[in-house]
Length: 190
Image 1 (cartoon, one colour):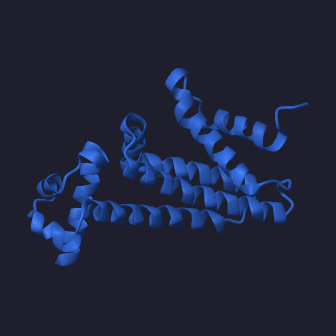
Image 2 (cartoon, one colour):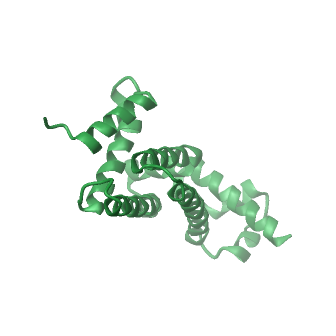
Image 3 (tube, rainbow, N blue to C red):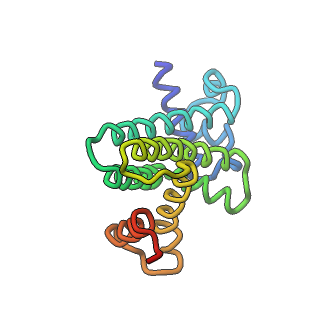
């Protein structure tokens, strides 16, 4: 029974964070959405920060699971890379919380929202760095600073899939991949 209540509270908190953002979410709102007393919430979570942390842990476990599945694929680095990038984008769109947190960081700079976004990004960057290092060892990728390469690849992909659309006609999946390959495998110099 208590597991169900804890799960219900986590779902309600996620809804509240998505609807109101981190800063504006209160334990009162969570209790109303979950239809439980505030005291019930406090039996599981002492603070809003603890509640938020639990949600981030669950999301990071889910993201890690997706990335580990991709890591076990028997495919070329570039195919695994695009599967990973597509999975990260899908994860972001499936988890409205991270869209809201990114918006809150941009609009008001809430420290906890920034930490939540950064944590998910750090998981993705570390995983991508490891994949690049493996590809270097296997001779698929030129020797390079894997941390810098991971950062550049992720930023380029996110820019083409989200930022580009704000001022231009959205690129379809194939055009995004063509441009990624241009920069990753061939470079832009003759």
